[in-house]
Length: 258
Image (cartoon, rainbow, N blue to C red):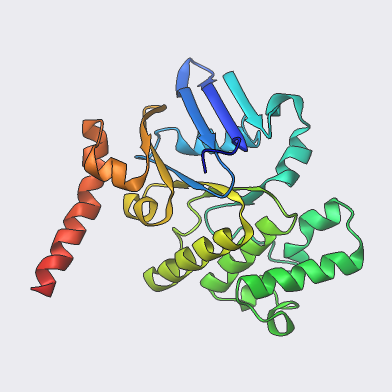
């Protein structure tokens, strides 16, 4: 993974709002092809702001963000967002258009040919385990929560991005669908090879899904490493505190097995 060049590289990235509020302070982060990096921490720690600066939904106040070695501040923000997939909290589907039209938004903006768009829509529906013949023409209101989230992933991948940005993508789902979609997402990422940055407040989710985890507090990254590294050697008391909930859950499950 680290033998390749990073597809994203953040160096000393900062975000200061009016009034001198420092939301993000000196963040360094590289994201490599095919890996999933989780940004985690308590509410207000700066993880979502960091995510939004990558595709310029927020502009950084300082530092640099490189996408495929190009500074994002030199790129057209609209074109940049079309180049990256985006999955928001909840499904974010447009309720007045069909599943196929929702998925095809970016390809249509990119002016793909109609036949190519149709093939891409059907292929993505199959990838997220929705039968195109059944679901292509359905409206979002006719879908379950898990089905809508699957369509949301399909839409994010429609333009063939090499980076997917995700803001709490599983948080609105019930536990059964959440677990199922987490597994399916990891399988899909392994199959397609895109990089992903996921914001989550759920440390257990980060431990299960991520290749590396960046723990943030008050706008800074306290520690970044593989899940096993954080479990074995937490570098900060706050990292230990965040790990205590999944540790306690695992201990409780072991006790039930006795």
